[in-house]
Length: 88
Image (cartoon, rainbow, N blue to C red; front, side, top):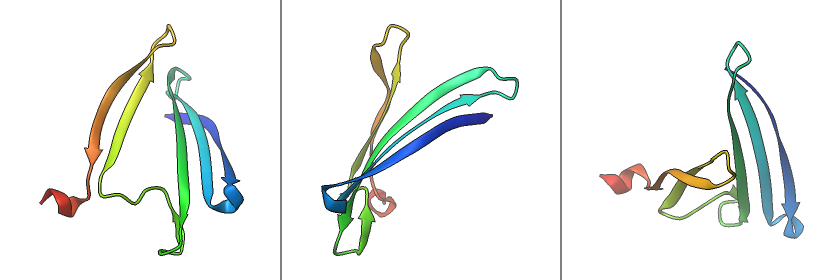
């Protein structure tokens, strides 16, 4: 597949947070449109780690949605992501 897209990052609150909006359209080698995905990401400065971190909880909830032709949205999948050691 090939992809065409881009991203835009913006620092807010004097650099305490960084927001990132991305999107990409994906195509088969013959030019057939496959899908368009979008992402909104927020990272905050974690002084105790000396770096930006997107999340720092023990459990992250993942949600994947899709838009229908009429503009409505529906869930494709949703689940809790936990560190590997927490599952053992």
